Length: 335
Image (cartoon, rainbow, N blue to C red; front, side, top):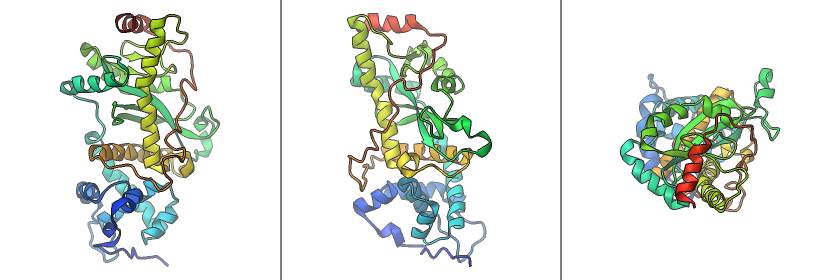
């Protein structure tokens, strides 16, 4: 027998307060209210029905699912709705949220570049950096017909997700189009990043990437075998600065456990997994924008924040490297 939503249109989980509320939904009431207001036009049923689920409850249930990494059935029971009903709610909320992706995830404007460069310079004293780039893996149950292409270098199935972040861990770009076997350098070549950075080259700005990427006119990587003191100093500064992308992955996966291995593999099609990854990235930025503290029941030492891919773990031979560009940086700033 089909269940009714059983969820009151007022009160309910929104009446809970303090740390428990933030742990459950990852946001405070004010931020969730803003999110509900933004998404409500796409979540209100065109036909009024006594068992219709209020937009606020739809948003809360999906936030709980993303934060906890629990099975749909568990979250559905907590929200007093059936599993098929929650599945429909998840699709609706993700679709509504993704309509606003360009207002959540965007490269800095030219007028903001000086501030962005200053923030990165404070991390490792490398000038003109506007982003750190890397890939991270999100586990999923692969389609049967293409199982092998989703098997990554760690021998589990995943999407390989490219991200670029700011010095404050704000996410500037997300590419979740490629399966786990695809190398980071290939994803970079087939993303929007080369075009975006090409447009910014007159401002002489760079991204930082690990040694799995080629060294380009707009992308600085470490020196593989440093021979001089200047190269060593450059590598040390590079490592201190680039570490911010690892911390971003750690915080993102800690805040939204559905993306972390401890939450298990996502039981969705690659298309739905991409939607979940992008939605979590948008919500991560929303939390930073509103300065919502990250709180979790397990405490800070549960191993999530440290769970990132090691430097150069899946390296391949880089192509078309612009070594002269990196060498000029080393000679100018690290002698």
